[in-house]
Length: 304
Image (cartoon, rainbow, N blue to C red; front, side, top):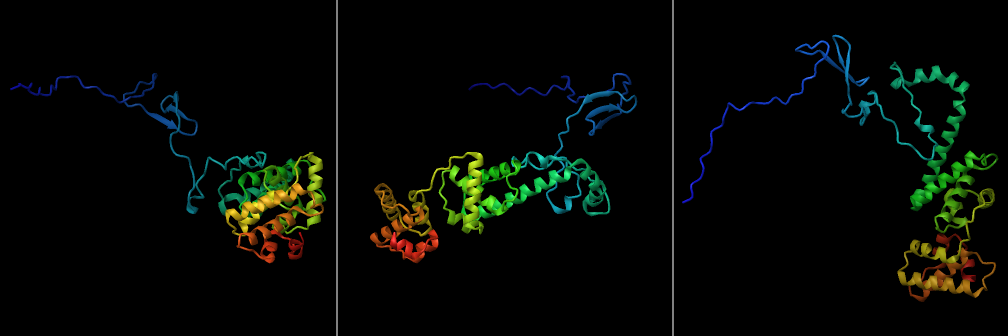
């Protein structure tokens, strides 16, 4: 049998080490150092002689407020930077404690005259107009499942128009509609004037006039909308199958190649191709259903 070594008893005579780090003032050298950690200045300070011993990094959590009852807690952090507001939202306002709600009312009343002198009123009005326009843009594009890239492009175009003073004398909603239309074109997504007018509830003439004005000012190449760009979206809205959509796309390309459709709008051509393909595949959609989706008359669909 193999003999195993017996376990050696613990030798208490081995030296024990103290791993605690003791800070002391090099001038006072008190056995019980009287040190203070100042979180405001970030220093270790000796209370006896006032010597600054070391710098301190505050590792505590930020003073965030996650509930309504925590609103009175002071916060050292602000909102994330918004690229659409030119950094105007990064201003800091430290409100004193008061009887008013969160101590803001008294502070704003005292600084109202100063804001007028410093020209802050104009900057605040500019920022307020941008925020309102961004909200309206998101509200209009949201129900139609537009991509976030399209919404961001529309916001950037509106900010550019605001910064270049192109909004004077123009209908605000027409500007928003034109920016959304331009954003869709730049994002390689199709959208007709009738659709943008239905989305924004703006007259077609105003949208077209504003669109041409911005396009000429910015020298933008937006291209043109063809019936091929509209077929897929109209078929999806009509819940048509893939084969029906492919036949409609083939008919649309054939119609554009023939060149005998001068004077017909892309919406009318796309609607007529969908009407024909749906009947060829046995899942016919009547002209009324297509008219409601495309925004063209039933007579126009049949005539095309």
